Structures are given as C-alpha cells and as structure tokens.
Image 1 (cartoon, rainbow, N blue to C red):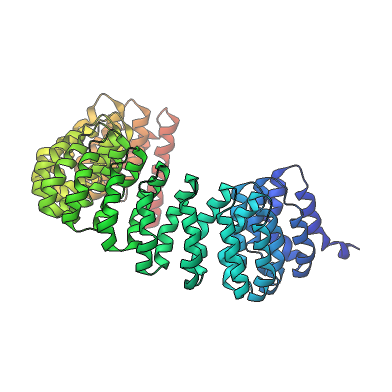
Image 2 (cartoon, rainbow, N blue to C red):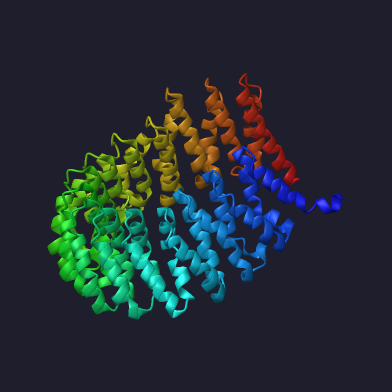
Amino acid sequence: MAMVDEPLYPIAVLIDELKNDDIQLRLNSIRRLSTIARALGEERTRKELIPFLSENSDDDDEVLLAMAEELGVFIPFVGGIEYAHVLLPPLESLCTVEETCVREKALDSLCKIGSQMRETDLVDSFVPLVKRLAAGEWFAARVSACGIFHVAYQGCTDVLKTELRSTYSLLCQDDMPMVRRAAASNLGKFATTVESTYLIAEIMTMFDDLTKDDQDSVRLLAVEGCAALGKLLEPQDCVARILPVIVNFSQDKSWRVRYMVANQLYELCEAVGPDCTKTDLVPAYVRLLRDNEAEVRIAAAGKVTKFCRLLNPELAIQHILPCVKELSSDSSQHVRSALASVIMGMAPILGKDSTIEHLLPIFLSLLKDEFPDVRLNIISKLDQVNQVIGIDLLSQSLLPAIVELAEDRHWRVRLAIIEYVPLLASQLGIGFFDDKLGALCMQWLQDKVYSIREAAANNLKRLAEEFGPEWAMQHLVPQVLDMVNNPHYLHRMMVLRAISLMAPVMGSEITCSKFLPVVVEASKDRVPNIKFNVAKLLQSLIPIVDQSVVDKTIRQCLVDLSEDPDVDVRYFANQALNSIDGTTAAQS
C-alpha cells in the first residue's frame, strides 16, 4: 500500500501547501514545481499538475509571479517540445490577471515557449491563444495579446497572417488607452516579423494612427517606434514617413512626448540618416534645447555630445553651441548638471582652437556653479579636455578653479577632487604638484568627514607610487609623521592609516627607520582605538620588514599591548602575535 501511495505524496504536499494560508509555504511549493514534476513523471505532470495550476490563477500576486517564471522553463518536464502546448492554458490565465508584473512574466514565458514550438502546434494552439486574448473582454487580456503577436506571426499560414495583422490593427484603435499603449510599445517587435510588402501598406497605417492618438501616453510610446520602424524601411520611405512624425513630435503639445523625442533623438538620427539630420533634425534639436519645460531641456542637454558627433564641427558651433552657452546658465540646476556630465566630450569633436575659444569659458562657469553636482560632473571628466588642449593651458585656465574646489563646502566635491589628484599629478609633473596641491593633500588628512580622510590616505599611497619613494620621503612622509602628536585622536589615527597604506610602497628600509618608531610610540597612546589600530598595523608590517625586526621590536610591542586593560586592544594584539607565530612556524 505504501508503494502505491508514494508517487501521490509530492502532488499531495503541493496541493496542501498551495491551499495553505501561509503565503511562504505556497511560494515554496511553487518554486519546487520542477522537483514535483520530476517525481510525478512527464505524463502525470501533463495530466494532473498543469491542469491543477490552471485552476489556481486567483492566488496572491507573489505566488502567481513565481508560477509564471517556473512555467517558462517547464518544457522538459512535460515531455519536450511536442507537448509544449500543454503549458499554454495556465499561462493564458496568468495573462489576464490585473497585476502588471505577473502578466509581463507570463508573456516572457509564453515567448520562450512559443519560440520553441513546432509550426503545427503554433497554428493549432498558440495562434488561437493570441486571438482569444485579443478578443478578451477584460483589458488586461488585450494588453497581454499585443506582446506575443511577433511570436505567433512567424510560423503562420498567409490567411492567418492576414487575420493577425487585422487583429493588431484593431488593438491599435482599442477604446482603452492601456491597450493602445501596449500596441504602440510592441509595434516595432511585430513589424520585424511582418513581410516588407505589408510594412508601408498596413504597419505604417497603424503607426500613423498611434502618432495621432489623443492620449500623450500613447504618442510617447510611438516615439520609440520611430527608430525601430526607421531601421526596417527603405531610406526614401523612412524620410517620407518617419521624419515628418519626428519633427511634429518635437513640437508636440505634451512635454512628455517632447521629452521622449529628446531622449531618443540620437537613435532617431541614425534611422533617418546624416543628410536629414543636418537639414531637419538640427532645428528640431535646437527647439528641444530651448524648450520651456526643464525636463525636456535635461534630456536634450544629456545628448548634446552624442548629437554633435553626427555633425561636422562648423554646424555644431553654428547651431548647437549657442544653446549650450544658454544652458550653462539655465535656471534649473538639473539642466546644468546634465550638461556638465557630457559637455567635456564636445572638446574632441570641436578640436583645440574651438575648445579654447568657446568651451573653456563654459567649463569655468560650470566649475564655479553653486550646485555641487554640476561642479562634480565637470571635475570627473577633465581628462577629456586635457587630451585636446594640453596640460599647460589646462593648468592656466581651469586649475585655479579646481584648487578652489579642493576646499569646497560639499564633501562629495572635495572627494572627487582628491580622487582626481593622482591623475592631475601625473599629467602636471612634480613641480606643479609641489607648488599647488601638496599642502592640500595634508589638509585633507585632517578633514572633518571620514570619507575625505580615508581618500586622502589612499591618495598619498597613489602619489608615492606615481613619483617614487625618494620623492615621497622628502615631500610626504615628514608632514604625515608630524601629525602623530595632533591633539585629536581621529587625526592621529589617520597617521596610522596612511602608514599602513604607504609602507608597502616605501619598502623595508624606510618602514623600519621612519614608520616603525612612530608606530611603537603610538602604542603608548591613552586612547584604546589608537592602540588596537597599532596592533592591526603592526600585523600588516610583518611581511614588509625583516624577521629580526619582527622579533626584536614588533613582538615586544605586541606583548605589551596584549596585557592592556582594554579587551579590544588585547584581542587585536593577540591576533597579531598569532600571525607572527604562524609565519615563524611556516618558515621553520
């Protein structure tokens, strides 16, 4: 009897857990569907498990989402591709639920399954499913239908293809805006499967209807279709059918549509080709850069460098640069920030002379902007300008402003400057660094923000790597070690952090002669945090110095710390002593 009941056990557990009030149990059972299916075997999975799932499409959204995902990879568990059609009913039910993420996951799974199905099964099972969804009373079904036409269309007969194109056209004119939005969103995918003879006659007619929709949410999705359809059409058809739509959209009464055009403009330019870009789309882009809505200007400003790459420098200077100058003093800080994040990329496009004449003043005004993100975006891209105008001019024109930013009141701006210092140092050379930036590097070690102090310590290590130990010994080490007597314990701690980072770069000799005495002295500090950081630092120095130094100096210091009243100091001291013992044992 037990042997007869045993195969029933997994499905019984699944059914019990699926009906359980605890959502976590139901979720667990759904996520174990593949295990259950293996236990049941292919035939019972088809005849018992899948019908059971089809009847349980009114569960919690989280459970349904997991079910939709699992079914997408279920073909091997139902007997392979010839039985793939049995997975369609539960997924069809999931395509009609109200929750969008469940429908989207069900559509993903349907697309996966449909792309593997045999042509006969597509015609017999998948196409009827698409037609049922497209004719569904509830809008969710019709929305879902739009997302799977491209899968159904490929393997159909000519009669069915005509019917599917006609059905899709009806969805483009549906009463519900959500359905028209889905039709607009998926039109590009559907168009890639449709024969070229029907592109102009039928698909472009649907597209024209969507571009004239009274809902801006539908029109803005049609903007995305412009680029996708443009790539499918012949160049002359693209110019005749797509270009006027883009130009009209750039003047649409809804700012959201204009925003979408600004966001997609580079792809739209690629669709219509370079000639039309210069004659028709440059005026459209200029309008968007001067749009009365800040969101549109933000999107347009963010594409300025990519757009200028499509033009020759003369056109960019004549048409785009005046707008860029206006945007650099725009009333919206977000517009200025978007511009600052890309404007440096214009330097290689315009060339050295034009950059010096036109762009440098804009860079300077943005570097002095009151909004920290604007300053930050300029700082992070300075190397692009350096490649064009050279370091001499950069140091004369922009670096005074950079040095000023090194003391900026916003710590993230100071942080960006610190991270840029090693690059500046390598480009400017030792002389300039010593004059202008050396004092700042020490000043940052005592900043009131921890992230700045930590970055400053890392910065010293990178400078030592860049200019070599001898230079660092002369210009960095003395100033760092002077801070060891600072009254503030956090600043004394940064000395230890700087030593730990610089010691591997400086080598054994300098570590033993300069760093180690300071560290040993710091082990007598009154603050426990300093002492346990000394213990951690001494442990990191073990591989750098000779064994004789470890035995003579480091071990004794750690033994003293291991008897400290503070529990944390004793812990880290013992950790370091264990490390020494481990190293000694390994060597012997």
